[in-house]
Length: 191
Image (cartoon, rainbow, N blue to C red; front, side, top):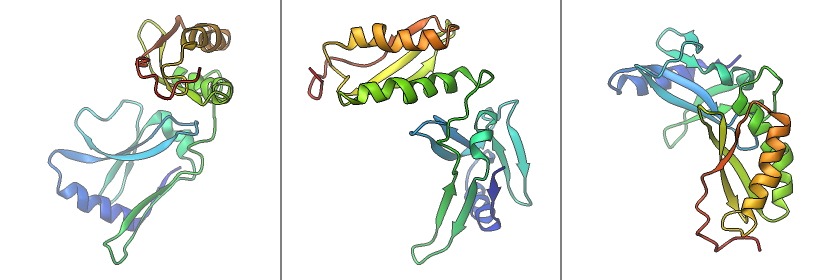
């Protein structure tokens, strides 16, 4: 489980005291289990708390931990150290980028796992990459291409014949993929 040191608790409580309507902090990881995982702490206000969040109560601070992020926050440490410039809040989450995916994992995590471990290595040969933006209610994975894939003349073939085929083979509950990328910028496209 995540550890928030006393110095970090005091620092966060001080920040919260200057905010209107802040209930505490919310800790979560964007794109957990991928090379782009980023551990975040944000002010938590009414409407931010989810039913499955785990609540941690301290003397002067309450923290809500996003349920989806819990396995990736194992052994995480939030600390605050004073220095000559004031101080620095640090977050160390050694498991944030570790893939932890099985059949019970959220669909977004399983899609990201396939993209980062199977699709992106192939796209990297052309300087490209693809990332998940969202999964729609009608079960389409909305993707964003970058690098050499943005503006590439073969992106439609890559999207349908490569990315979509790979995702549908492994995640049959998906209806398909959609591309959100603006391919009119061809300045870095692979040809």
